[in-house]
Length: 267
Image (cartoon, rainbow, N blue to C red; front, side, top):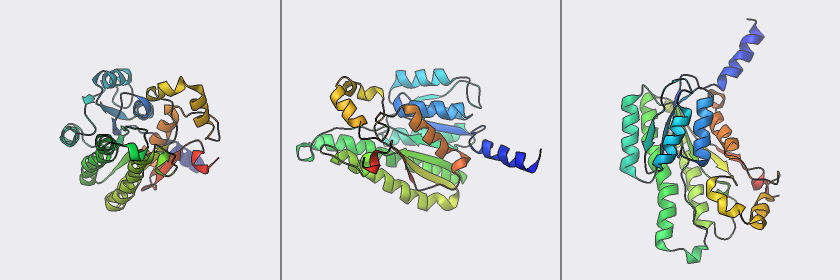
C-alpha cells in the first residue's frame, strides 16, 4: 500500500465499529430501533434494551447474526425510569462483557399541554422519564466507562430544547436539561477517555406520531417548519448516532448534534 492508500483506508476504518460492543436503551422502536440497526450494520455487537418486551425481542431477533458477534443478540426488558433496573442492567453488562464501548439512550414521553394546565402527575411522568431517566442511564454507564477508561455515551435531546411553541414548555425543559447534563458529564469524564454527546432531532416519523399523520393539516404544517419540507426518518437520526459512536467522532464531546432538517434555523 502507498502512503495515500494507507491514509484513505484509515479514514474508512474510522466509521467502522467492528469488535465494539454497544447497548441501546429504547431499541424496540423508533430512533432506538434504527440506532441498534445502524450500529450493527457498522459491525458492533448490539445489546438491546427496552420496556416493551415483544418489541425489543423482535429487534434482537432481526439483528441476530449481524454485527461483529455473528451470534444471538441480547434482549433485556428494562424500564428507563427505574433506577434499580438501570443499575442492574449496567452491572449485568459489565459482568458479561469485556467492555462496553457505546451506550445510547432514546426513551422519552411527551404530554403536549399548556403549562398552566399541567397536573403534578403529568409533570412527574415527563420529568421522571426524560430527565431523571437520562440521568440514571448516564450515571450507570458513565461509571462503567470511567472504570474502563473509554467509551461513547449518547443521549437523546430535542430541538424543543431551544425552539418552543405553546404546549411544549415542560417537554422542552427536560430536553434542555439533557443537553446540560451531557455537557457537564463530558467535562467530568473526558480526562478518563469517555465521550458524552447528545443527538438533537426535530420531527421524526415514528409509530408514536401515527395519529398526527391522520391529520394532514397539522402534519404538513410541522413539515413546513423544516427547510426540506418533510419529516425525518428514524434512520437519518440513527446515522448521527452511529457517527458519534465511532472513532470518526473521536474529538467530539459535550456537543448537541442537530439532526433537525434546519428547523432551528428559523425558516
